Image (tube, rainbow, N blue to C red; front, side, top):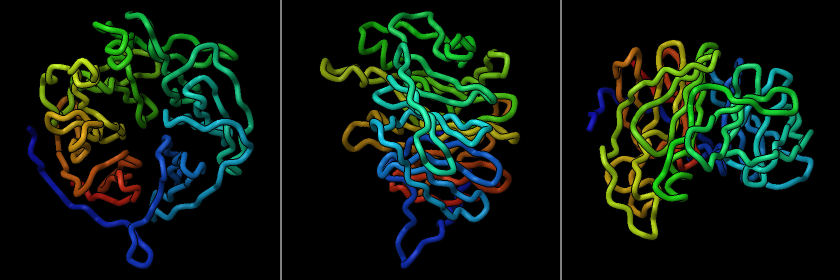
Length: 302
């Protein structure tokens, strides 16, 4: 296990002694200019967090339609945001300014998430066979393969689906971090040309999963990474599983450490005072964390 090298947690501003509440159900985030845009699913809203002061402005979503999915968001230069709905079957476009649902489009095949490939919409595909592209980019009305990340094989259909759960975090102008939720502790930096550089990251999960019970195929895996944020100074990684119990098991400990990795070296590991949910922002001197208790806070870093 990797020991904490530094710890300094700064409380976020609060009102009347209560911790600030940001998100009922976290759906995704995007960082642009002076704001962090966060999609909240309960109640449905877009929340803009000022990157300097951490004050929050809320715009309720409108326009009807089905419930949005917590599978990430893609922010576009025209001020709109894309997300999935109906368990990945529908692609929705929202106005970040008004919260209005502008467009809903049925996908030919459901997706497991969306992200921004810089000026293009990215879709994380669901694959039922091994060796197929997991990242797709929008090209007009269609999606085409992007990057060399391929689906992996699984011993059973359930193991195949779990083993191919892929997430993408926040990136830079040059690369976007993506990772398999279940598997070894590494993050793939996806470059603009689709090439991939794999980065080994610290883990607090065991090297080998426990033997799976017949009713729980998820126990056959370990889940090292919950979130990743790439900035010019390096890659910040939020742990997921910590210890033998998988994240959804009763009594599990998860997301209590954030590690800073650059050029294959771990520069710093920060212990959090409570469970983290996402890294909202990273930059010189501090991180902005969203916690599982729905509060936000600034964490100082070296």
